[in-house]
Image 1 (cartoon, rainbow, N blue to C red):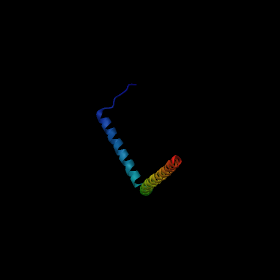
Image 2 (cartoon, one colour; image 1 turned 180 degrees about the vertical axis):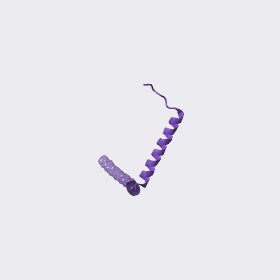
Image 3 (cartoon, one colour; image 1 turned 135 degrees about the vertical axis):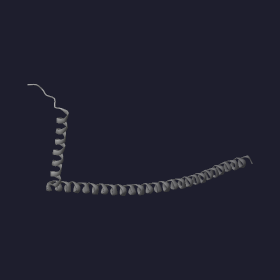
Length: 123
């Protein structure tokens, strides 16, 4: 037995027959009620997926708003802490200056007392 190559016309008619068979199969499935049910189920799944995506988007927007509000609160508290620290530093500097003045006055009083005592011994 030999191998016979199909001719061009045979190949063309086979391709046309295959296209017709595929088209008939598609039309049969399109008119089928089960196909309509599957299509409706797919549409339901798509709608549910879109609803979940919208929920995620809304939740993300809410989280971003909350994060922005939290960042504003943190920034405000940091600024308040910075101002409090600056005020405390000024108070500390003023107290240190007062202490130094008081210590200098005390040292001067001791020095003056020693000087007066020395002068009193010399007389």
